[in-house]
Image (cartoon, rainbow, N blue to C red; front, side):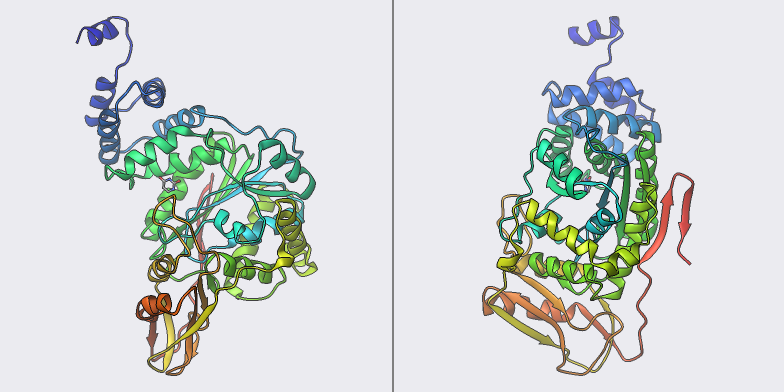
Length: 442
Ligand code: URA
């Protein structure tokens, strides 16, 4: 009590007052937010007070100015990568996470082959969604733990490096996310947007291309929520002086033809050779064009793809990070096809069910410390729009044991929705958001 009176006398903010202001729906000053966050990171504010504030934010929301102040305070809580030794406009790319999402593995090297500098810090698989780092580590020898000097040198030489974020970057996000996770305060737009964008801003790139996914296999349930998140993140990126563009994309069905770490690396290599799933190729080309645009690089992206330069860039990147593609990607010993139980056309493939089944096979992790099986996963034999006959394969399961296949068989079969009329594949990119607003796809 005495401390609080003294603080008030001296005109200092205190945690209780800040929490009370948010509870009552008032707007924080940037100073209040900086005080709260920096005190929390130093251990001077206990979890129970921070949790109360987070819940107040969940219920009351935050203004754009507050969210920017929170993001900046989070960035300031740790190290920021200095990329000034790399010439040109550096471009980062981020996806909010999905099932079968290997776009970074294709668009990153392709953009690098077009002349864009791509210093990319990525994440790991969590729950039903995959992570780029785990995918890369399925290549024998690859390391994603690059010291800043090596990371920067690689981007200078090859145009792209993909690495894990240093634990010294944005420590506030780790603390806050762990607390949000156990206090039902994850689903708040300003908290999600500041969490994602603080990491992107600390990663040091000049421009950021975001892929905000919505639907069954994504974090955001519907397109309206995804557009709101995209808008919020674009405002934060631009507010921090980074050119930011977001694509809003559908994640009701898995992307491409494979789900699982090594399987997705193989699919990315094929896509970089111009082969494979058309929808995946279209999305990768679109993301690459956006990366070129924000970097002010003019390139014929399709021509670069056809030339094989993107694939060559990917192989050089893997080799620079210790990879030995020539040793082959890990292959699961058991590969069993699951057949359709009726004639018809594939209307949809439940991405969440596919992601959860992949998790069950060991392709992902439920806890941070879980080990993953790089070879496990699925190859989609009957994509959305395909016509199938009873008994024809829908999907091939790649697993370590027949028991694991047995365990996921009915769940994965039921992920396919088969109807008795022709189906057209729905559009994948539904909107684009930049500082001028939202443009819907035709
Ligand atoms: N991903 C993040 O990095 N943070 C969130 O809050 C949600 C998704």
